[in-house]
Length: 88
Image (cartoon, rainbow, N blue to C red; front, top):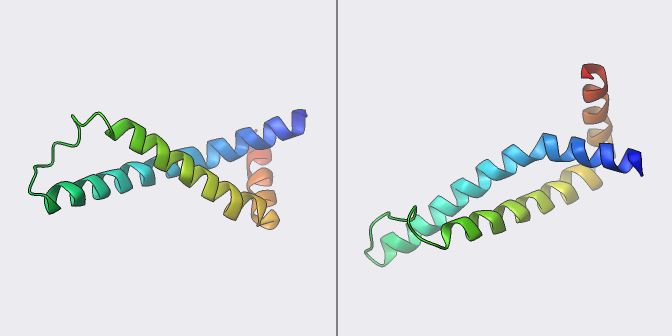
């Protein structure tokens, strides 16, 4: 159980920021395209749906990273683990 927790921390520490950046950019692009298409300004910051959309995209990108990079690529996972073991 402790090994799974350490592995989860490594995954989260390695991918959370990247997934959040992609989610924010994707939200800005999607809301911006929606608003420009209907002739509304770029006031997506005040939109009450901005935070839930960012969270939705962030969870989606975290799931994508988990499946593609972490579970389906054990060599990459071992490389990340060994890099963090050297650092710690």
